[in-house]
Image 1 (cartoon, rainbow, N blue to C red):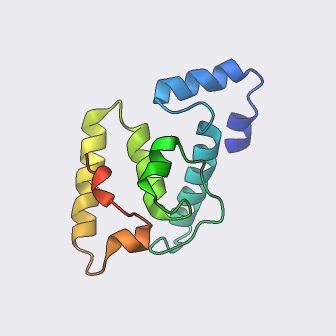
Image 2: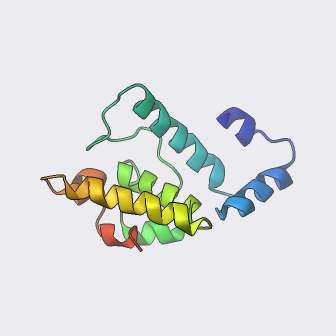
Length: 123
């Protein structure tokens, strides 16, 4: 899927997909690649907590300002939440479930996920 997506013959099609998702056209291929790696780790029961991803998604200026580690799960969560921005009901549901899950964690989740200020995801 990623190869097909990244190799669209007409870059206008890639821009249309990115626009529809509300994502930066220059970053969408990188994001999809990173999310595929995340999906594969989940599907094959790979560890995510504290894991350092080898493939790092490109960071938008907004993401860079957060100062989060590009190789950690926190950035993946940001990307997923950002891609869901247009569907506020689903995004709020995703964020709510994630908050409940993380609230059960006894350790400092922000450090394990590479997040300096995790509250920005919840907004």
